[in-house]
Length: 70
Image (tube, rainbow, N blue to C red; front, side, top):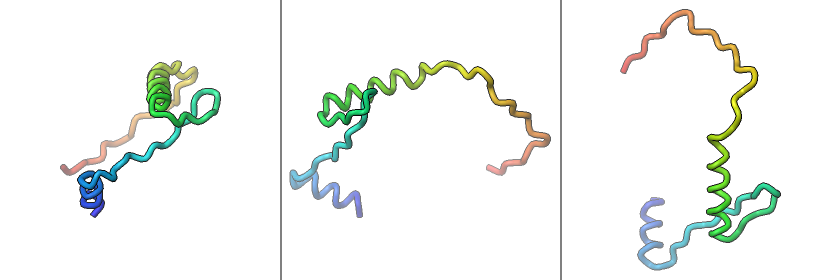
């Protein structure tokens, strides 16, 4: 049903994607679409560039393999 109503809204010209503001580093909300895009780009640049853990968790291997049926 959701897809049907979205298609009707798009065809009638009353369709708009809701904008959800995101916070920047200072804690203020970005409401403009250009500001939001810059905010998302900033977040995704930092995400994979985090420092490595100082003390990695000590995870022991499993004692037995569990059969998985595909």
